[in-house]
Length: 60
Image (cartoon, rainbow, N blue to C red; front, side):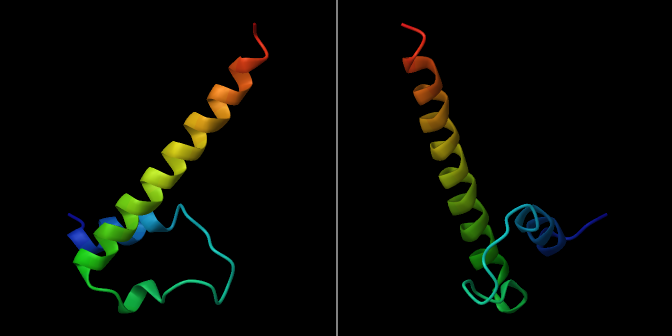
């Protein structure tokens, strides 16, 4: 069974940043990792919803 930290690092591996422009996630605490996952998930969801809404504006 995977630890909380392993699961958080696995989730964060789905997001990529420009090298040198992000924290070294291996040095973050589990709580900091969880905050980062929630932030990136929320940003991705907001961007997806905005793109999805833009796609349907032309359907009028």
